[in-house]
Image 1 (cartoon, rainbow, N blue to C red):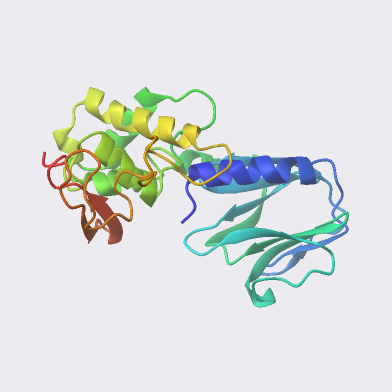
Image 2: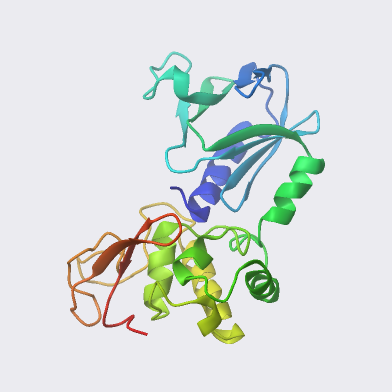
Length: 262
């Protein structure tokens, strides 16, 4: 599943190619299918894991890629790498075709309308954009979730803070030396803030090109501390990295049983 940094990089890539240009042909395959031909793109921006494309008629195209979604760019006659039946949004602009395949969610909504306002209220502060409001994040965590909520679920809950996905969940918990099944109630506000400060730093550090990296070292070992390193030695203590599907959604989770014992 794309994380918040991926969506911000996507917005940075698409923005210069779409903004100010008119859609020659295009559709958003909601129910019913809506034509986008003749609309001009006004802005492209990320909101957590959501990509928003603003059009000149006061509407927004919102896509949430989920586990299997992806945006592709093709030449006008280039063969698509995924089947056309998976295309939820198709934009033909100048000499290129931009296609959103198999998103988890897609809709066209009124900018500043009810659905847009509901989305803004539902999502916590974006950890990448602007200044991080840690006081609001802490307050939302305490108000929305119970003290028994495990940290594996806390960090993935976009209602608390937007942008953290499964990779950063695992890496943040390792760097903060927290066991994945530790609970929200076991953290004071300072420790809770520290989790999100760490997440923001990692997300923002990966806004450039290249593979996602949370561990920067001169050696040739992994650029990640624990994610997808099941059974391999911990970079800190050499204990074998553990793995299980944890949390409400049984998401793949990696941790060091020694470094994250508490």
